[in-house]
Length: 171
Image (cartoon, rainbow, N blue to C red):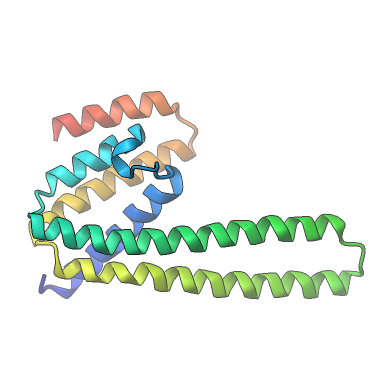
């Protein structure tokens, strides 16, 4: 894609789609197809009408990014649990606590930077996808954000799935 604004927008969309997908539904052993929660993602992939070459390229890029992001997230979650244990066992002074918390925040910021760097691998996708495919992703992004906001408001998951499948059928 040659338009830098569209490329940047699509990259942001892809980052969010991958992040939302990997953070809300863990991948099964066999991948995306094994998890019934991924029906919407599978429909989206089919709507993109990726050529076989695009599919291979996208799969390669996403596999690398998702693997790296998954590893980083697992390490961060393990460290958060470890830190929670340290806080429970902590018997020091307020100053010692502040030093400990500051060190954890710095460590977390470094890990967040590493996560952003891992996600930067998605920039490769802007050279793979067409403008029309970008429009399809944009529409999917809007729908995913609506789903996310409904979940945050506490709406029933089953009702959301039925409503989302109906929306996908209509579009």
